[in-house]
Image (cartoon, rainbow, N blue to C red; front, top):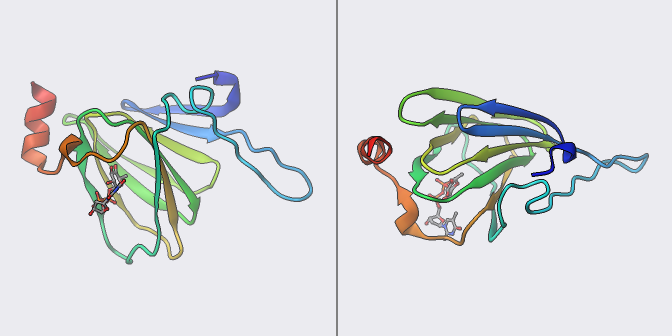
Length: 144
Ligand code: T46
């Protein structure tokens, strides 16, 4: 990643919270993200969640090898992160913020405001066998 392209990089355990560089003018704002320049992996998949039911908790899993960047392009949410030893909560509240989550990290997304759109850039295509959906299995996986 070209460090000059992100305004700020805040490390939270093995995750990174980016403040991306907006290209603003008197018409408004624009964020551009390029793989390897702004995003530390090849983007093989993009997905987003919307119409999230209030009070719901999404995620509750880890990935064996997938890396992702989460961006609340509209609204806000919180992400609870757990590497099996430490736990942290990160808020995504602005469309210019991005959270990089590496593999082997349990995540739970919650406190979605109405109309939140959570955009995810992923390093690989969808593969259910990459998921660890049981917390005890996750703790075993990270301690191996
Ligand atoms: C993650 C967090 C941040 C697909 O068919 N293709 C896809 O690319 C995805 C992501 C999901 N699905 C199907 C699988 C389930 O039947 O969509 C349904 C909902 O998926 P899931 O329950 O895994 O959604 P979340 O919000 O709990 O988790 C998602 C991602 O799956 C996960 O990789 O890290 O967002």
